Image 1 (spheres, helix red, strand yellow):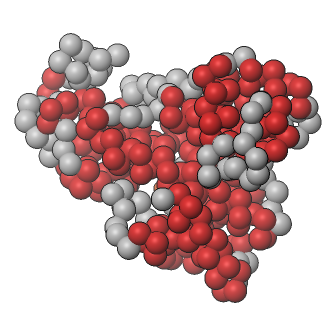
Image 2 (cartoon, rainbow, N blue to C red; image 1 turned 180 degrees about the horizontal axis):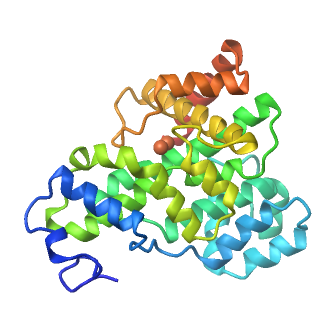
Length: 299
Ligand SMILES: [Fe+2]
Ligand SMILES: [Fe+2]
């Protein structure tokens, strides 16, 4: 709910002071928004959410998936468009949902549903448009690279691609919250970054919980910078952490420029993730090449 001056109604006037916010103002806003659960993230489109769940279910059949995709023309159209984009196209253009399902497979369709969800529902704001586009592309890269890590290490966990796609949604949600609250006084990203860096994984957990995404995905998102989970969740967090590092390295190797959103995994956590996954140097070298290829195909 947003007041007539653009600030969310739940904020006290003192919490959004006139003029440019300080780092403390940003911290208070984001902590209250997520910590007290006052900030309600935009809803996920129902059909896209259902599709993600269905495609993650190994016993779901082709007909059920096709029916669900067809139930929402916007999603069906966007999925066909994405399926025919250089990122996903592997042969002749795809003309029907049935072809898309049989060519792309359920896992990729689930990913596409999540990408469409991010585009439709979640997070664009003129104040941070470039940063928000970068977060979205980075999340797609991390999801794909996480799958490459899983393939390399023979890990099977159906939640990893979706967790990859949502892993930094807390950054996007926080940026939208800040821009909505401060309107014309929205600070540049550099001024908001320290706080976002601290809180985005937990903020992301709140967002995916609010969306009703299964608990393992929420837990993976929450621990992608600190590997705080247990068992399979911790292993999945390690996969996302490695993919996150590969995406960042690939982007700087290919583009030769620093990202707008400087979300980085620290080296100690990266080392811990590699050790946990028993990911050796030679496998890492191969994955780094994959990452560069993937980032290059994105540009
Ligand atoms: Fe992150
Ligand atoms: Fe990330």
